[in-house]
Length: 73
Picture 1 (spheres, one colour):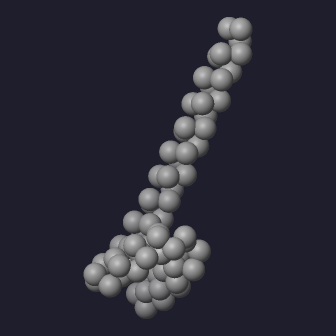
Picture 2 (cartoon, one colour; picture 1 turned 90 degrees about the vertical axis):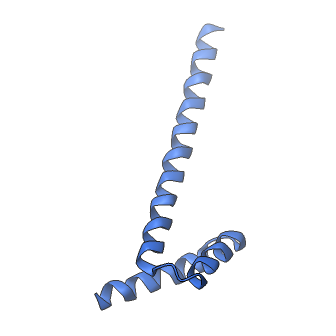
Picture 3 (tube, helix red, strand yellow; picture 1 turned 60 degrees about the vertical axis):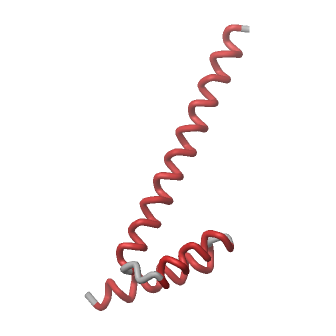
């Protein structure tokens, strides 16, 4: 349990250092509001994965539509 808490705190510090200022500030506000650190780390990681998957999907869709346009030309 202690090890997990320590890892979560390290993850939060890393996130605060690596996020842009707006995202870091939003994260800081959630910490100040008392959101559980484990829950917060999990939410941020899942949110990041979803954003990554979403951007990959958008990229694949636009490549697919570009490919179909060039074939019909």
